Amino acid sequence: MTVAPVPETLRAPLVVEFPFTRSLGPVQSAFLTGLRERTVLGVRTEAGTVLVPPVEYDPETAAELRDLVELGTTGTVTTWAWNPDPRTGQPLSTPFAWVLVRLDGADTALLHALDAPGPEAVRTGMRVRIRWAEERTGAITDIACFEPYASEPATDVRAHDGTFGDPVTGIVAQARLDYTYSPGRAQTGYLHALSERRTVGERCPSCTKVYVPPRGACPTCGVATTEHVEVGPRGTVTTFCIVNIKAKNLDIEVPYVYAHIALDGAGLALHGRIGGIPYDQVRMGLRVEPVWSEDGRYPDHYRPTGEPDADYDTYKELL
Image 1 (tube, one colour):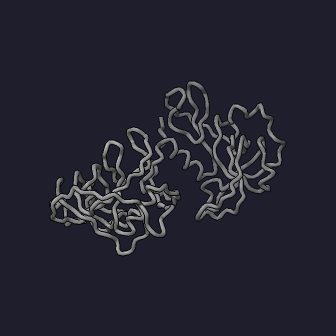
Image 2 (image 1 turned 120 degrees about the vertical axis):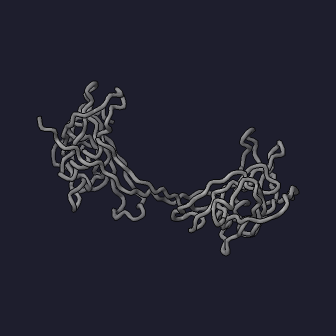
Image 3 (image 1 turned 90 degrees about the vertical axis):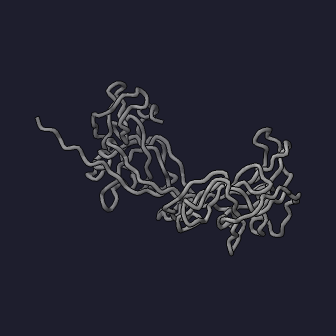
């Protein structure tokens, strides 16, 4: 008996990155504006606990919080972890310690970086102070990092009305996640098939549903799926949305249509962009076929086949 070779499991670096824009309430606005002015603000709860960073509502009672207090710029390390290999966008480019620092007068700890020559120089209970960034814009990065500093803890806090000139009212945070992705056995086979301009799913031996892309197991029945089934290449638009906001670094003019497409023979719909037709003419039941990318490794988009629209009863279970 000849055993077919198992294709090598794929692995690739993957970066998920996007800007997150949010407006600020009065407490968060005062906190970030204060950092720009080298002032650290906390908020006092009804129980007298001082929280840093401050929050708008009491985490225990949900009461609205507005009692701002000014804290010192020194504190105590409550716990830490050494970071030997800093990543892009982290506070320091050289090895440093992640630390939780309870600023003097606060009852909670603030997470940030500690600039230290090595892990042997860091310990729980050590005293530190804020090193301010030379250029400050009203963000947590206005604290460049913490640095070791010998001092006695201070306990006094002063009331602060949170008023500053030109307050910060919103922020844009750059979210980024770097990791190595492995699609596993089932999706590795799916990607290899795409490189041959074929779409392959796997059939559940229990419910017989064909999953595309395959998952290696049926999420309904909980059994492994190993039977390969080639589906498509044509399919039916089951539902869709019109995209009106242009994505960064995506060379597609808006508006365009992104749809769920049930490929012939598949047990559920997959995602795909619809092209070759005005966006306002895309409809449920539209029959489409793939247009492959220039390198032929995946469908760039789907276009109408010219066939009559599919009857609703043929795809209603796939919505």
